Image (tube, rainbow, N blue to C red; front, side, top):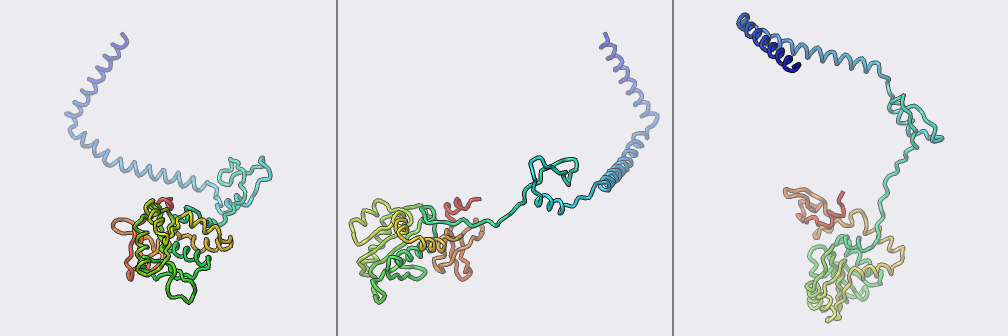
Length: 304
């Protein structure tokens, strides 16, 4: 019963509102236009008054707020040390809060991590640094060493002589610096052909990875060719005095030791951006137009 009674009252109220609206429309035909004009002019005025009111409140709050000396606050925070865990002082920003002052912050410049010769660094080393390191290694073995000129080397990177007066090399060295792929039999045969063309009885192929089974078999059938892989290189370096190893590490394991060099200029390449992405470009551009793709291993080692 109460629900039916309330519903009847609501129906009567709705009918009354409708009758009043219809009567006002016929008695005052200009009333809707008048109401719309009032809303159109009053809403902007109300918005302006609200913005002015908010601006006054913000101004009064800033005027009453305490002035904080941030430079003094930072100096106090990093210069004071707590005497005990219970010693607390009010916060300069929020006086109602307490905090324990931190110890003075000493920021030392980051020290460059020193690299050493190992399997990882020798695999990543630049081809030119690898040739120079091999040259230094044979010099320490009391050989007379001569490196070939930049550019096409004809299959020979280093020539070994019996003494300084010799004009004909006694051995030829070819260096192959590759990050992951092993050296195949084609490179061994290439060195063997150069030895025959130059009438040299000894050839050494040095790499910073490994040799394939076919390459080792070809070298075993031709005793004039010696193979030096990554393990052989590590063994030869370990035989040197520690002072010489330290000197070689500082010389050939610098911050750009894995950045490739230009084959024509023998200068370190630099990163450049083109239409198809980043690439290695020569620093002597436009005199030299050497370009190289960025290897996947370099991206992985220098990922941030």
